[in-house]
Image (cartoon, rainbow, N blue to C red; front, side):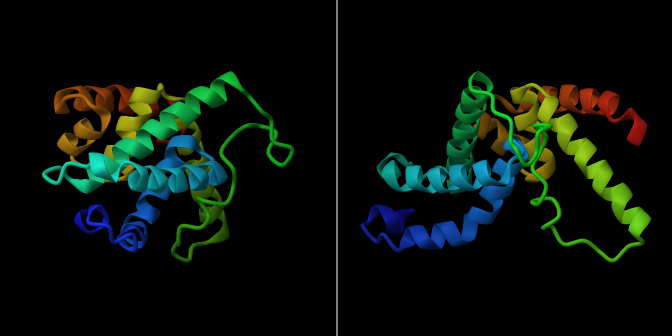
Length: 181
């Protein structure tokens, strides 16, 4: 970020190369749609460039980056709830197939593969049904492996509040996924 603020615009390419995959996965998990996540990931880095002067050098870049991505995801989620659409390719409205299957898997028996994919789809659907604040805490801490303090900074709250959201989210997920446990 120091190089970007100093006028070296190619530094944005370095930042994107390093952080874009994690931001994309975060947004996929938040939104459940690969195409929307890709668009918002690009918007995230557009905002990084646009608001580069607002970045505080004493702050952690990934926290600032995930804050931008999270805000865009929340705004998009609110917009999507006010403008519902039904895809002709996926009329159920559930997560688009494709992004989960792109994660490398170990060779397994076909029945185990099907069971794993069904379980993963059930988990994604259960996470998508969580309230936004609980879903964000689960995605950041469980899937993105961020510490409570970093997730708290991204969500603009305390670590204790994130811990409480994780507890509530996990409890709701256990209830929703009882069949799979």
